[in-house]
Length: 315
Image 1 (cartoon, rainbow, N blue to C red):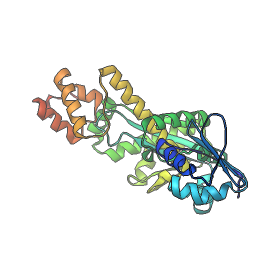
Image 2: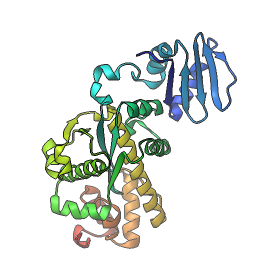
Image 3: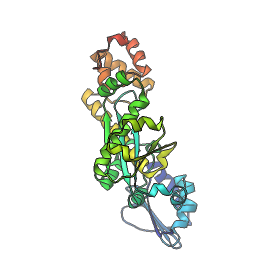
């Protein structure tokens, strides 16, 4: 279906590229309040606001979006293809995604988000996409606030803090099973708010039966799908941003409590910060701040003169 109005949320890099593109003399400059740049071409007005919102309107708006914005700025096909290739993306369902799985410090955060056709269209207008493609934490946090405002109680967040994570891992000894448990809880929590949701979709990280086994009564009735690159689905993309924001907030709080800036990932920088913490507070601090099954733990402890035997019990 053709539309005469399109709205997108652009990140900082996309905004810079668009400003350069629209500076071409073929675009007629306009004066519009609160814009970085405003231009027009025949039957099309293009306004990039200081907030990063892009508004494209007019009879030729879809043509400009399809043949200029998508290939040159967005680097993906957005308009007019989703319903053709994935009609289920517009039908009522929830998406589930996680953040923090590969980070030494901080919790494992799993989010679920419910969508229907109206919500999908609004998420698209907001520029919601897989959080891994968002380079800035501040952009992710801002988008998460917008998503929560849009969805209201149609989303849920499950946070497994480091101490609980380490206790669970000691018993389960399998990250995918722990992830399945978290996904199942996120599904169950959202079903309490949206009991009519017929389907749940997540990225494929292990056998589907692992999640199915972890589901309680309400979750047993839902259709559960997993697929690779599920983040292209609008519900999963929304969940990925909510999970990332939850993880970033948790790291910020941890850093405030410890008086440091807690780094993400499992890099040399992360190891050095962990070594400082252990040297200052003892090996037990890792149980409160980190995922101790990572090999990083052994390297950190060895550097400061400890071994895993020096870690207190997780229970």
